[in-house]
Length: 171
Ligand SMILES: Cc1cc2nc3c(=O)[nH]c(=O)nc-3n(C[C@H](O)[C@H](O)[C@H](O)COP(=O)(O)O)c2cc1C
Image (cartoon, rainbow, N blue to C red):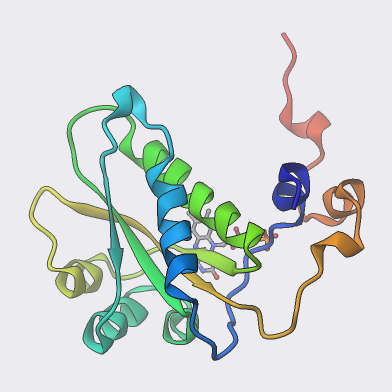
């Protein structure tokens, strides 16, 4: 897909097909996160992939929409380490890279806020200085998606987003 179509047609999806992601697809998604820039190139993140049933159950119990974690083919918790800089912003860049990279490969995704931080901390066995920012779920869509069926302008118009004139302040 063209970059503008990837960006305009990305929607957050919380239900997934019961189909695994091939290893090279999961690796490509994680690598898109690795490639994100960060303040002073510190790369203050760890991408924790939930592989065991126990960890996945723990993550499902810590987010608002458990079914997404239960059904997803790939679940990644973004954990930041301290050290100055705007680490949550850095984590956001890595997360969006992963989700857009995934969508370009036909994989849908959703970020999840953390409803129960202590449950998440326990499930991930985090060190004191580590903090989970967000949980990402990925999977193939239940029904095939065809982003090419609309133009970039159509996707942009249909997005539930504020218009630019509300967002841009020109000084
Ligand atoms: C930081 C963050 C946390 C989010 N947490 C949740 C969540 O806990 N559960 C959920 O279903 N969606 C969550 N979302 C997804 C938002 O609901 C979604 O980005 C927004 O509704 C736009 O969706 P759309 O791109 O499909 O239009 C989160 C998004 C962000 C950026």
